Amino acid sequence: MPFDQRRKDQTLLRSPALVLCCLAGLAAPLPVCAQSLMLRPSAAELPLPDVGSAAAPDAFYADPADLPPASLSGAANYGKPRPYAPGQKKPKKTTAHPLPPLVPYPTSAEARRNARRGARIDPAATPSPTTAMPAPIARRPKPRVEVDPFAPIGIDVGLLRVKAYEETDLGYNSNPNVAPKGSSQLRESAFLRQEIGAAGASDWSNHSFVGSLRLGYNDYFNQHNADSPDGLGKFITRIDVTRDTKINIDGNFDLTTQLPSSPNLYNGGAPIILLSRPIIADYGGGIGLTQDFNRLQLTLRGGFERTYWENAHFSDGSTQYLSLDSYDDYGLTMRGAYELTPGVKPFIQGVVDTRIHDSLYDTSGYMRDSDGLALGAGTTFELSRLLTGSIAAGYAQRHYQDPRLADLRGPVFDTSLVWTATPLTRVTLRTATSLDETTIAGVSGAITRTGGIEVSHALFRNVTLIGTAGLTNSNYPGSNPHLNQTLYQAGLSVEYSLTRSVVIKGSFTSQRMISSTPGSDYTANIVMVGLRLQQ
Image (cartoon, rainbow, N blue to C red; front, side, top):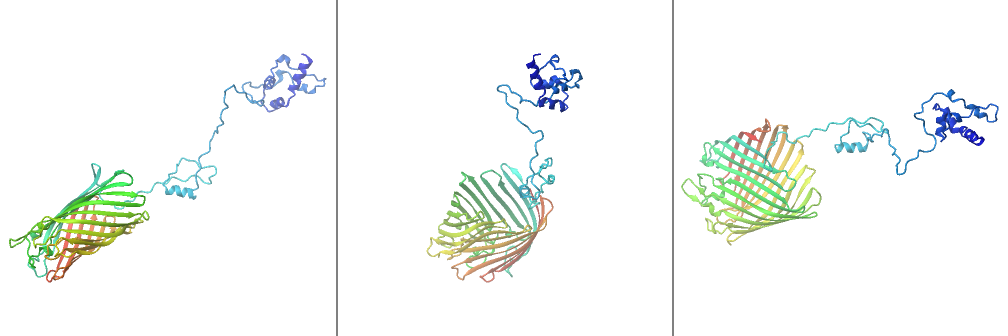
């Protein structure tokens, strides 16, 4: 071998990299170590030891047969970086064991917020390396508590959820004819009451429908002239044209009877015995448009209402033609409301209407057609779900076509409040004022004010105790002598729900009417026990 080539090989073999490769225990043969340094010598080219030469380090190398056996399959490359072919990308570095997601401490603010939002913790999630304790065990969500666990569920009828019921009551009335003390008509009687009803509501993403209807009949065993039907119904439909524009369509129905103590049934100032109670039926409806301007809401509604009075038939064969006093009422309502807060919305309202009777003259020869005007202001509110409802006050008057009839006017109060005192106790307060028609000669009409309070308390989950109290005052201005009637009423009832579909009911009601007309006061006590089937 030439001297220059031998010198070059000895220099490379004395490199530190090759020495470290052999001393690190890789046990690679000399050709492999040399190959890692880009050298490929054959066995014949390996230098022989020369002890006497100045190149003492060459003595380190021995015959290849004396080298320790090693595998030629894989030796670590501690030399130059691995070259990549043109266009070949370096592999991305990946973590063999990625870190688990961070888990907040159970007592931290973030954990409390997640608990309030109902966030569920994955039981299989492992805690973060920075977490001092393992992840908490997932909590089972709390069961939903029903406000009324014995309320009817209802059935689906088309697109509505309908709750229907049927009720049968057996009762006792100490004065079904509401006759004054000492009258020959003062007789007690047992009675049977039948009542059916239904309520429906929609569950749509937009638009809305809510309605209810109730019909009942009292059948007195000993006083059939006191038999009387009654009913009440209403509905309201909201059509969402746009987000800020809505169309409201509503309807109402009210069925009752004239009581024998009503001043409208007096003929010539003397009471007359009725063969049957005349029916009074009110029904009508309206359509309105509501437009929202941010927090300002404007509503315009046109309505129609029909009031029908049935003729009264008396024991002497005479008939009082009350049907002549039946009338149609056309009205227009304007309302503006402004939302101060999400729970308080004050409003002002104005109503104009006209009443047109079926006959130009009534039985007394008076023209009863009239025009009305009412102005009022109030507010609707919802305070933390504890106190909800509305309250309004204003002034109303009616001007009659007959100049002999004075204008009927006075303040009006309308209130509907529901106070949830406790989860078991609820208090409801209602007041209303109306200007009603009358058949008394020379009297324009009656100002009727009603008020009532109801307290409902759940003794148990299926036992509810209800107490009621109320009064109705009817004032007839211009009457001679002045006529004023006040009806006081108080009652106590209990409802025991066997299941969602079966309810046992019992009630006691006491009525007391005081009139400015001598000999017209009466008292009545009513007791009922019944069974209600509902779905």
